[in-house]
Length: 342
Image (cartoon, rainbow, N blue to C red):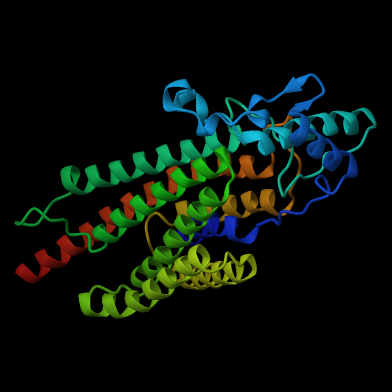
């Protein structure tokens, strides 16, 4: 079940590979001058932005654009920064210079107002795969496997996996929102949802690898971790978004899970162990995309977006293992009950 480590580590990545607001691109005097002039004039060359010279946000509702059009607007500063970045990168390309980051991000091309279209698309696809996996897990438990007389599943971890599925879908949803538009609110929601599912992953790792089935013991294990994760989320949202401390927390929880699942995989004789090793090896290769960062190809596909794409097949295989684990545990429990009956 080392697969759980990689799934958790996928969620550690937003914590590990954070970026500051200062980058080489936004330190460029030409870029800074362009943005300053644009915020005053409302234009970058022939491209002008009405919102720079407009107070339409305070206008009566009946003369404002509808919300489905407003959401694509970035405001004066956002549009000025984007157009100046596009122009400056065009100049750099003409001079044979490599792309640089602006305000912590590569120069992406927008699509329908979406800041990082490839990452958004792959985040949505991951969300869909988690939903499909979670739904198939539900169908397997309640429609394909035997149930107890009270119509509950034999599998002892069913409730935990349901919660995890919901937290994972929530995390990928906010990942899609964050990559659509990186603002303070979406960043905090993305970080918070990732930390929540990472913390719950740690709980699952402990409970599953040590086969904790007694409810009182589960509470004793879960309570301190839940309290810590909740405190940490409150800290980064309402006190200080400390990237360094957040990284330490993410690494600590990720490494803890690595040790737990590695130990379990080493001693386990699970019939679907091959799926675990495929996810471990493929996950390790996918991690290189985050370590060896590179600018977006054609303005769309950077290392992070390709990493998002790589997690899609791993998610499918991961949920396949979870279903196999439910079948394996159910079969084992039924055999034990029949043996006792004899």
